Length: 206
Image 1 (cartoon, one colour):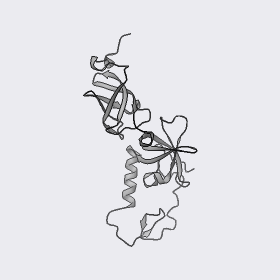
Image 2: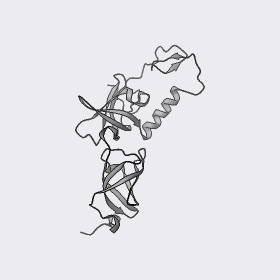
Image 3: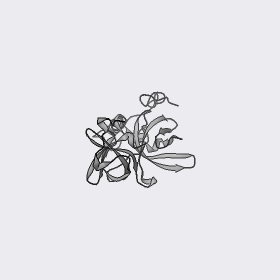
Image 4: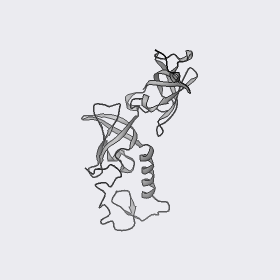
């Protein structure tokens, strides 16, 4: 069969052979970066990572395909110990009242990853939001740790943080309904409406 022009292999990086390289850079918010092998950079796409999330300096194994713009790393596997590995995921559902939810991740196709509110930035878990996280193996299955919200969800978390801790607030302020959140006034009725739909698009408040 004729090889499409956009995927014509170069002699220096023949496809179908597994290679070992190092992640040169990777932006988890944008979902792409570069991997270096034998002095040559190859483009690294999120879709080739199968749920793994690399960091600069990580060793990876991969095969190579070539496009008009250069070589592309495919079938990428990040070579790090399980306890150090980061993963991509999407918050499938989260109940702020009960304080837990679940993350779907391509690296764990048979079971969603459990997440506690305490592991989320500002306890914020927007359904459909993308995130980066580590995993620990619990008795009932995988659980997410060290969660970082990505993209729009990350921006929302930063805005929420700024709202919770505005500049110029001094000492002597009272404690609000979120424990560490300071407020100078009585907070009766503040938490009304924080259930169903109170955490952004897609929240079911279960």
